[in-house]
Image (tube, rainbow, N blue to C red; front, side):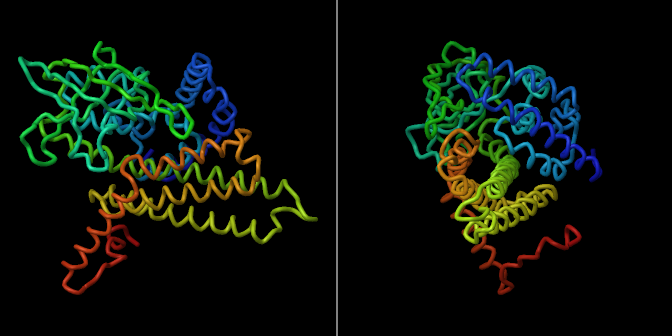
Amino acid sequence: MADIRDWQSVRREMKEFLEQRIYPAEPILQGDDKVKAREKLKSLVREAKDAGLWAVGHPVEIGGQGMPFLDYVYINEVIGRSEFGQLVFGTYTLQDSIMLNQNASPAQREKYLKPLVAGEIAPSFAMTEPDIASSDPTQLQTSAALKDGQWHINGRKWFTTGADVAAYTTIMCRTEPDAPDHSAFSMILVPTDHPGYQIQRDTPVLGLHTGHFEVLYDNITVPEENLLGARGEGFLIAQRRLGPGRIFHAMRWLGQAQRAFDLMCERLHKRSAFGGSLADKQLMQQHVFDSLSEIQACRQLTLHAARCIDSGDPGRVEIGLIKVVGARMLHNVIDRAIQVHGAAGLTDDTPLSRMYRHAREARIYDGPDEVHIQSVAKQVLKRFKDSDGRGWDFGERDSEWGA
């Protein structure tokens, strides 16, 4: 799948599958009948596997199709058009699969990584805690003490997405209580069927129950070998997981925004008021122009960040930019689409109401806007100060990519 024609072909096939198979199934997948929703999801997964659209971005050596990173970025843009795209196409596990591939022991790879990529089990990740400001993760309180070859884990996490169906949770724990900095934390793999793993609630998010669970860890004991990577490297592992993940988020946001844009344009052509089509009204045309320009600008920022990652640069400034700009763009575009739909946009007769609530989440998860804004500004100002009067070169990387 390395050449450009291949990823374009896969992109077209996925978009067709989304429009013809996933969109019509969304009412069932979002419905209150969880058994029916699970069966429908399993059916769609089988269809996606049969169509050769499963795990396209996972490395070949762990059972995926090995699509190159930059190619996969374009695919993720399509997957994001539906909140269920990741589950149907097997890309929901990509961040965790990469994390395990980089850090897991042979036994951990056999137990978790292989079935994860195959879609036989689901992962979950626990970092955020309800009683501290998680924007400063050095305050995390969940602890793990090593005694007689066992980790004893105590604490409470929330927003552990998919904890009810996951086979295990990767938990960020404080394992080095005397360490004054980020080296105090480690990652530990905990099976969710452990009796001390106590799900407290599916935390409602803006009125939606979408599987973000609060979990109590009540003196859980797991073997020492459940440590993922080395002691004290929890933050390093988390950053390696979150960096590419934020690009994946941003591309999926673009997919959501593009779907909202399509719905808005369709509505403008179908509706008339005051003697003419809504598409002929200048204020409505302003919504189209603003949304188009914001989507395209954000798209270029995201592709720029992806090129940084692909070249081996961590792209901390670029990723921070898209995390903030992408979330704002997503909100703005969906908001305009709702405005164009009028009262119908506030109902669940269109996907927009649900999309709007998810869009608001984007400004908080994986770090609130304020943290990324401060981080980016500090990095830029430092580089400017250290540049010996050369300033900030906006085209600095272009020659590296043949621009």
